[in-house]
Image (cartoon, rainbow, N blue to C red; front, side, top):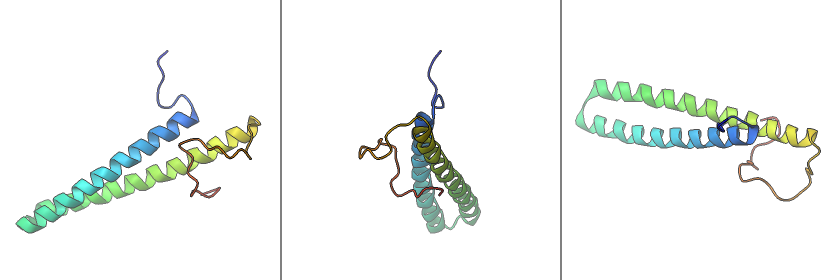
Length: 102
């Protein structure tokens, strides 16, 4: 059976992180498009692009929230499996700025 990004919590966390980064890049591009449309005086296009920007902002917020939840689940799994929580090595996807319960 082929592996999917959601076979385990670690790969799901990585996938959601990559998706959040792609959304952030799309937001940057749309912000540039808004500036261009404003310079051209295309008010209807500006309004549509502003709606797209808002939707992308909401999507990014949901992805960040999902990443926090997945990070909590990874920590709980490690705790339940008895993995050494005091070990200094962190996995590449651990977010040290994410407080517990965020």
